[in-house]
Figure (cartoon, rainbow, N blue to C red):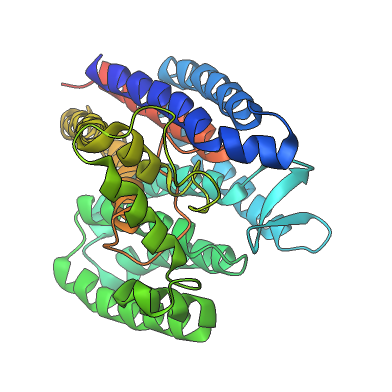
Length: 356
């Protein structure tokens, strides 16, 4: 019940704050103050329907279809890369759809990979301590998915996917020594990805000193801090943000927490963080008390996915991490991301029904 209440509260806050953060932008771009609000409400309703469905479906049923679901996810992610089929938005070819409506297959890939790894490692848990026969096969699959997502390119989604997958692999009993070796190799590869793309390198340098290029690479970080600072303890008041007037880019998506801090202050931002902490705590309890290994690993992956997104998004907003395109779960404006997040929480709620 507590998990469900936290989800509903965060979703309600998201709908209100998406309208507050986007009304001016929506009127400027579409001549409709309620454009983003209507979209958010629509996808919130679809997500709630999906959540009610998944919370009433025995989570064990997903184990039977995990392989087919992951295959479909790979097909969709591959289709995105084909010119004429994939739609480019925000500099990344990561959408399938027509006009303003579409789906983001990489979001489906996250939950598809979590389902399949939970199935695979629950059935072959005894092999996970073996490097070649146990650890490499699932890591190879994750690496393939990450590579396809990076071809879009979408580093943020790729990082969430890899992070959630590694949590599942660790929870299944993988040896820390093996994971540490792979961690160093992954760090080297990550540095290579950053060095290979000038815009990623600019984000790193802007993160270290955003005021070195205040109108370029450091602009988003500076404007985010300009939003948070004046919020003070109680904020400027709901709807009273100044930064949403075309100063802060993406105020309704990646940087919505900046607007929350500006309008609702430290108290409002703190309440949002507390709700996320309670949600993650309940999710971890579900993972610990799940009746079987599959349920435990599945809950671990879902909780890990949510936690990684929250940590990275908030970290970017307050200047702890370089800017990357990761939304705040349940709050940021979104279609595929919001619907899939609620669908995943529905699975988590179903696991909780059978918890010990």
